[in-house]
Amino acid sequence: MQKLIIPGGIPLHGEIAISGAKNAALPVLCAALLTQDSLKINNVPVLQDITTMLSLLKQMGTSITGHNASEIILSAAELTNLVAPYEMVKTMRAAILVLGPLLARAGEANISLPGGCAIGLRPVDQHIKGLQAMGAEISIKHGYIHAVAKKLHGARIVFDIVTVTGTENLMMAATLADGTTILENAAREPEIVDLANCLNAMGAKVHGAGSDIITIEGVPSLHGAEHTVMPDRIETGTFLVAATATGGEIHLKDTDSHLLDAVLDKLTEAGAHIDSGENWIHLKMHSKPKSVNLRTAPYPAFPTDMQAQFMSLNCIANGTAIITETIFENRLMHVQELKRMNANIKVEGNAAIVYGISHLDGAHVMATDLRASASLVIAGLIAQGETVIDRIYHLDRGYENIESKLSVLGAQIRRAR
Image (cartoon, rainbow, N blue to C red; front, side, top):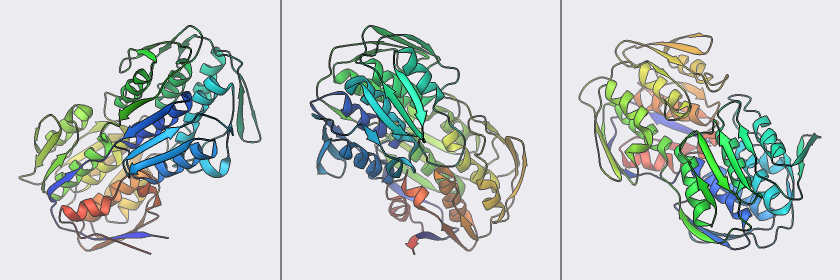
């Protein structure tokens, strides 16, 4: 099993480009199932989750070609297999996103209940509830969701909780439904807007994406289109936190500061000096960071996917910080690994109290999920001595060439078996 070895204590300096967003690319790939025509997608990140999704779509009958690593053309002219098997989706919860498109276009889908990181339950009941309201008959047997609908119809659907993949799934399904669908208490994430832009380019009529009420007027069919995936705001935030924690100065290209206002506000509070333009962000640290309190919540509040990275920053910051996780019940598992590096953290329920210390010690640690992996990389970069991170396959699910990019910024980091 691969691991990362990081000798710490080197401030990050330099310039790198940000990749396309994993969480935007995955639903856009699934949108190809909605049309017989070709969908060309640009700025697709090279990640394990993307590879898994492409394999899933291919075994359903989708032909996939690409002129280079970040440009993919998908054609689902004939759907030959309406099953998403457990073996292919057990590591990726986003596989549930094929449910809505398959049901809308083919009238049937048989989807294994998804797997992924062990950070919380993330039940699919909101997906099922919405599709049932649109006329689908759904049963769950032997670990599979079996859905049938001769023709979906429009409905008013109020989500019990804010769900990103639930919003995306029902939004895609509604594009081919008879009548108008209204999604209330919808997720507002930028990735929702990115998917809506792709669907509208394909001929859909989606209105209100980015707000908590999304209206979709169903159309008889969708056509081919070309779409460029938005930049990855979580990768952007991760590198900005790493530069802040190490006391460095970095310039990020091909990104958008408007996608992570809450993160930039917290970095400024920590003492970072930030400038930004249309597609770049520049960050510089002049002193040791200050502790920052944060509370995760749905967009546009502070993202849960940046909580672990900020915890590593707070470990060596001046002061004491309280980090409250409100989205996932198991998303503080990185605390125990940070404690192995001498971090002073106390957990009370869904909150972690982080007492800043002078430095972390390099240690042998284990990644428990995707963003926890990133937090341990940051901890390794700021620690005294060498840090070894096991189970980095989590990291490869969501960060494209992270060790190469960190090496460009001056970090000493290498991959080993």
